[in-house]
Structure formats: structure tokens, C-alpha cells
Length: 222
Length: 297
Image 1: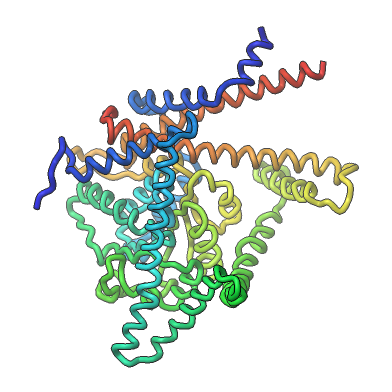
Image 2: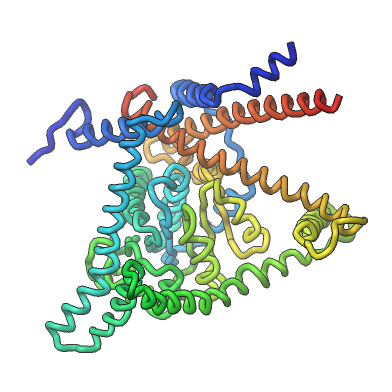
């Protein structure tokens, strides 16, 4: 059956675009002040997100990893498939957190997850964040070339920022006093850069919605 | 006079600033200026990495973002996929975010339509030139398992078809068969905490990626240390990459680039809105310094 058309769009696209536009405006109405339309759109977003995530968890995790192997085990008689019951039971034990008398059982899967995460993650952190980053900070600062000046800024930035967070001694004198003050400057520049990139990202989202409203919805953009 | 102005700025309703931003967005989108887009070092490096990919090289493009990351990350994925098809690479798309593979399908559809229009002699075939193996929960454990046997952890593609049936998977057994990973990340669960520490640092697969500008400062250190082979840090670099990717237009036989008018308009708006924000920041700082000076006197 062919889809009904409205102008150049099919009816489903037409309805979708209008609902999207109305919800976008409802969310942006919060910029003026909190109101019913914003609240309605917010609750709708939370509800649909929760429903969507539940279906994703079922279709991508529970169904292929639990129900399919169990069904295969039952139909073929291959009992090795029932090994999935171990992680399934561990997962269910997480829910005992909600039952006051049994909540202690939730510690079993939590300790497993934390232990596994720490064990597997420790090596990754050392290999990614500690050794290569220290290595990248040990750089020549002499003779005075453009590259070495850049290196000096990196080294000075790291050392002075670390001094700022060294609280075992009073920040006085040339090393700790001046060092921590320079450290603050580096930190402020870092926060400024982060603020700038945050603005950039948020503005991009706004522009995208603006493009949608003016282009796809109102057809004002040629 | 100055006191009045100072008081006006101090008590300025934030909604007036929002109004200025909204007007700037509307006016610039409706009347674009097509400002010049220059090429940054990051975009050049990234293009270099794409050009290191040769015919039949297997690459992973990981879509680790949701709809909220699309405004910045879709132009990147568009450029990356187009260039990889130009390089005749074998592209495996996947995602550590549940929405990622769905967004990948939408993007690749648009890329193929454009690519086949620009290259009528080439046909991009699903299962031969590219595949979408879908979303997989589990984060870094997925990478650990991929290092042993990809087909055991991804038994089907996104549509539920047996992965063994696709020609592209004949030469891909484990992660070491992948020449490079391009990971586009909208936050946690992606480039920084999965691909970089595990695929790159533990299994030595070169990793390049793209991120939203909000999270960009977290990534620069890995570019400086050489751990990341390339970084597209937000929409601006994505626009630069699109501008740098060239092809010969089939109809006009002239060299063209991927930077569409739509992306160029959005880049314009970004520049103008940033300018307005900067003006407000300067005004606020001047008023703050003036007030401080007055209170000292």
C-alpha cells in the first residue's frame, strides 16, 4: 500500500517532523521560564528513553545472550549452553538490592564486577594514562628552538599544576609560592579552553535544532 | 552614566542573551555568508591517516554516539566513510552505544547515494564493501574477545543475518586483521575508555577518532603523545575534513569537495554565534573590572 503524501512528504514524515518541531519548541520554552509544555516534553523524553533502553537491553543483551542459548540447550540437549545461567543469576542477584532482607546478596555480583573491572582496567590505565603520558612529558627544553619552547611550556605547565595540588607544604617561596601561582594560570587557561569547547558543542546542538525548525519544518532555508 | 550602564549589564536578563543568540542563528541560517574555512593541523593529520588505508584493508568505524552527538559527529562519519570507499577499504561498522549502529545505517545510506552518483563506475555492496555488525554491550570485554575471535562475539550482523555469510568477513578473524579503527565518540564508552586503552595500547591497532567539542580537551594529550593517530575535535574540524576530501564531479568533470552548502551554513552560524558570545564575555569582564576598580577607590 502506498503511503499518503502531504506536499512533498509522506504522511508519516509529515507527522514526525511536526511532532519533533513541537517537542523542540516545548523544550526551548524553558529558556523563558519553567512551564507545562516543557514539563510534558521532559516527562515524555524520560518515559520514551526508559522504554527504548529496556527494549534495547532485551533485544541486544537478554534475548541473544540468555534466551537463545537456553532455548538451544533445551532443544539440542547440549547442557553446556546452560552456563549462561551463572551470569544470569549474578544479574538477578543485583536486583536483591531492592529487597531489604536479601540485599546482602547483591554484593556478590558487585564484587565480581568491581574486581574484574579493576583487574582488567589497571593494566590499561598504566599503558594508556601513566607510562605514555609521563614519557610524553619528558622532553628536551634546550637548545632554544621553537619546538623546545613549546616543550618548555608543556613541562612548566605540568610541574606548576602539580605544585598547586601539593598540599603537604605551605605555598611560599620561589618553588612552591611562585610555582603554584603559575600553576593557577595554567589551570585557568585549561578551564577556559574547556568552557570554550563546551559552548562550541552546545551551540552546535542549538544550530542543528535551528536548522531543523527553519529548514525541515518551515522551509525557510533555501 | 557609566554606573547606569554597569547596573544595566549586571542586571541584564539572561533571556536577552538567548534572544540575541536565537536572532543570530535565524538570520545567519536564512542569509548565509559562506565564510572561508581554513584547514587545521588536526584535519590534515586525520586525512593523512585515511589516505594511509589501501585497497582491501579492513577498517572498523565505530559509531559510539547517540542522536544528541549527531550534529557534530555525523559530518565526521560522512567524510570518513566517503574517503574509505574512495580508498576501496573494507569497512566494518559497529557501536558501543545502542543507537550508534542505527545512525550508522542512516549515514552510510546517504554516503553511498552520494558516492555512487559521483563514481558511477563503482557500486558499494553490503556484505562485500561494508557491513554493520551492530551494537554490543560489554565495553572493553568486547575488545578483549574481538582480539581472539570477532565472529564468536558478533555472530550476526545488525539485521540478524549470520555473519559467516558475508564475503567481507572472510578475511576478518580477529582484531589483528583490522588495519585501523576510526571511533566516533559522544562521551564515555567509546574512544577514550575502550578503543584507545584496549585496541590501541594493548593490541597495537592504530586508533584515530572524532569527538564532540565538549569532550575535546580530554583527547589532546593523547594526540600530543602519539597514542591517538588522528583527532577530529568537533564540528569545525569535521567541516575542514569535508572540505579537504575531493572528488571529480561526474557531470561537470571538475574537482569538487564534500563540504555541502548545509554544512557551510552551519559553520557560518557557529562563527557568528561564537562572536556574539565573545562580545558578551568581553562586556561582562569589562564591567567586572570597572566595578572592582570603583570598589578599590
